[in-house]
Image 1 (tube, helix red, strand yellow):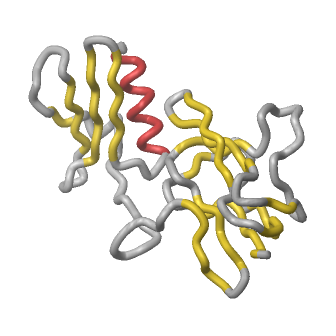
Image 2 (cartoon, one colour):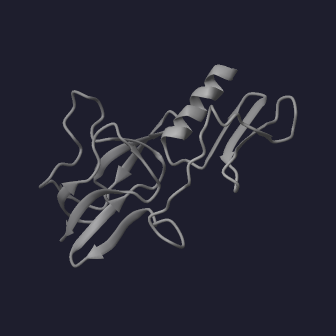
Image 3 (cartoon, helix red, strand yellow):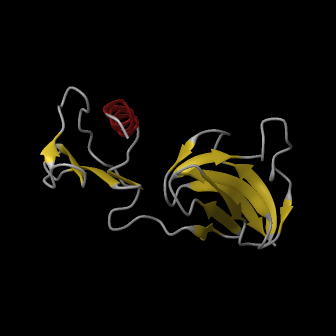
Length: 162
């Protein structure tokens, strides 16, 4: 991994709400996180083992916001309204409604799903993760656009149970 790639990762963190990023390659570990003071820190196992601050002009620290006060929302379906279940993202990644741009979406409004129905794919670290509905019902609404980044616990689909 070279400096250009590290700067790209930092730029991606700047544009998202990620507070921590880690990667491990053959003989190389990199961990980037936003410090409590707001100053991002980079830690690498190649060379120096100490954390060092990143130039603030490269990454302007942004406060990390959470939709809940105490902890992130659990992954999987969550009961929010009577008869309505939200399928939530079990990970951070990029949301895809279909296997390819030319393919039909796995789940659209009106699609009947079961616990094992594939509803989307979330790409994380170059791995395509198939996400199942985990609930029997009918898709009422897709809440995320194709190709959009998603956070852990983010609502993906609104499903009417039954």
